[in-house]
Length: 631
Image 1 (spheres, rainbow, N blue to C red):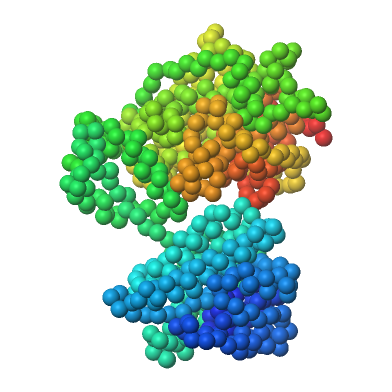
Image 2 (spheres, rainbow, N blue to C red; image 1 turned 180 degrees about the vertical axis):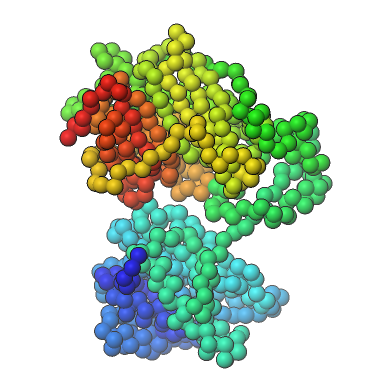
């Protein structure tokens, strides 16, 4: 983006803004158009030694003298509601909270008192919590919020004599990370900074010449950017000082599962795997608890495949070591059968949003088995195809409940927790029967080496009871970290995605999903608790259970079917989508469509967030179709 970053119409609250870093933040935000509440208790660096209104007043006077808007607040951050009330009374809203107030009481661990420990937690951690909690509902109502927490290198790395301070600062990182998850759906973003700057706190531990050189004015620009409308970053942790800015991320070893079917988990099995546990070669950089949870679930489900303390997989002869592309491509598993009647077809249609009302009975043909034109939605074929796909990458009983893969492909072993469903293609050779039995045959068409990952291209052919081909489904899955085996970089078998034309869409359909949509869709076969259990979703790093990607695909396919096929399933030939981001049940899906010849390009996004959830997508119409838009 270009142009000056501005805060016109925004209201910011900066705690501890009478001096140092807080003063620099307040003055910069005000100079860019924000109305600022300058909070400062006026106490000393160690707290509890009286207060004065003068520091806050001086900053307010400076802002007003420069033509800005500011008011002072002298309350303790432990009275968070009073600070926020000052903003509401003076300016009518609150948009930005910069939690900066802090004190120090440095002592070695054995000399620190309970009071020394508690007061640091109260000012830094509890104070930030109370101020932010008071502001949060107003930000949620306005659909905009920016929150800054102030951590420290002391919390991240430890610092002699600062056990109280380090504990509070590390707590602020956890507070910020969770607020980032809870706030993002309402455009409330929360980030943490670990600043290095000369201040009344650092002058107690730094020489004066260093305090003078490392100025707060070099930290303030990062804070301003993170608080602006231009920033979409949330859950970030940044070190900053003297104009140097760096983002910090976690690093984790690949680790090892210290048990198997034949080797119990014991102190000795952990010891015997210690080299793997502590090796950072080819390390991960996790971004959420979901990354850890996936490893744990893979360990739980893969008891027959995990490495034992001796370093060999239980029951593994060693013939599948490494990647054998020819073996993987040559494997032909037994076909699976899927038997169904009208109930399964109707349940799927309900799962992807079909409804009936007095004003609109157009979906009745997909929901009522007695309708003269009763038929299956074309995308219903994904259900039997998915059953066969899971059979190819064989799942355990637990995996069938969690949707996690527990075994790989002959000739290609990989980390099951790193499997992501990337793309989906469906081709209809004839309409789906409304009941009967399908025989589904699966095969691996290609293994693609993407360097940092591998791509599995898998086809599933679905045959009717007359042995004639009904449909073909192609699953494209990405395995993070499984590349580098020297395979091909692309595949002629992989159905390509396609970007839409660079013009305004020819048609747009918006439709709100139900808050129970995921609960309904999962009854068609994908019983992963991630889509219904809030606690399970939280362990996976999501603020709430998410909608199945294939459910979002079903919604978008229906929109195209209605818009350009008049709900005639014989006109629906093929579909391709790339999965980009998850959808929360209750959010509104927007499908934008562009028709060129017999192809309808489309893109699906969430109205509430603007995030694209399906991209590179299109529907090919049957050659005999002369379908035109309903517009």
